[in-house]
Image (cartoon, rainbow, N blue to C red; front, side, top):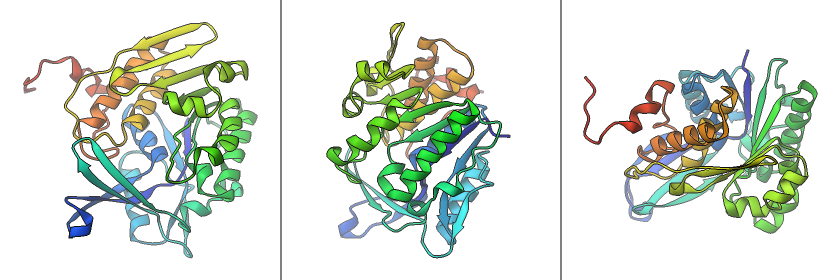
Length: 304
């Protein structure tokens, strides 16, 4: 049975090859922070389930087919006959600058309900994000239900703040995300996101065991009641920065489940993030466990 469970919305993603307003072609795939983390964990050898809801449509088929192919358990995913699978559009305006547009209002993923949440009895880690509560009352209640079930089962709860300004303002998000963050065991976010939920000292005072700060190309830091640790990032050519934070989270959480120490957890997260930005797509470039050491090789090496 899956030891790790994630909860959230996964959408059909369309990546524009040129400017949308001028007419262009698109490359289709899937996208969603929680399912990206699920794929990353699966590739790193963990048994993981994604909980969510997709439309009874072709995009929904693509979501489920892709996750199954990546070894993610989708056995409890609901199909919604009355609402479509959500859509996300990516348009790269400049090298390193990507515009993201959501079409997820009224989507199947926004209609997930608390009574559909079943973590299973063997869950050991539950990963939640601040994106799901932004989708409406139903998803917000589903996150609360997942948190409650995790506590009943003694599972570790990780929470990535993941504030999406295009879904809700900081003012609306703060009173919802702050209590969720303070109820987690592991909180992950950028410096601005951690400030949104009260800051590192307040999180530790509330009982959070680990606060992880994502610093992009500068790596990541970990703060606990026992001290602070930092691991530098890996410098790689950036093809697509979207999904780097979720890749980091997958690497960090897999290392946490492996029982690695603070710096090793941060380092694996940074490695996964480096792989992600070196490949186009949210999840396509995520590494397997066997590939993590490739970053130590000299540039131009050919493996034969």
